[in-house]
Length: 204
Image (tube, rainbow, N blue to C red; front, side, top):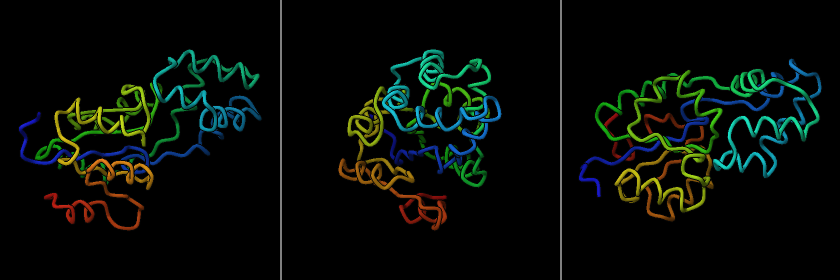
């Protein structure tokens, strides 16, 4: 068990540290192959195939091949990856907050994501590397809000669930964490994140 006295601060990534837009992915795909965007977006975010990808059951190359086969389109892996990854915008104030907190607190990332996006965001947004424990669904082999995700986070970090402060924008994910004893905060874009953390006892 981790002997750290301070709590582990756990950040979701999407719409907490980075904004992301599936609509941008659709436009990106349509620019490459007119009419392909809608088909690919549905496969990526609305089917079992996409869920399996985020659970780490397919490689990026295998996912690309299967998406194109099902959509009936042709597109190089490089073009697919570039279009798929061109959907993120940094939330600079929140990344700055992560940088500051990581100097004084143990910090973690916990995101439902996939191998393609993970490799991209870790390279494109180096501030994410400030987190001591970078965790993602494809690495944990399961997705939030499954209780096993939070338990695996606890096991891998050594922090008990009751010694975490967790920020996510999905109410269902927050509720699942709370049922396990996590102090979970739901970021809705209205209350400043800095203020939410301060109320939770974090020295921001």
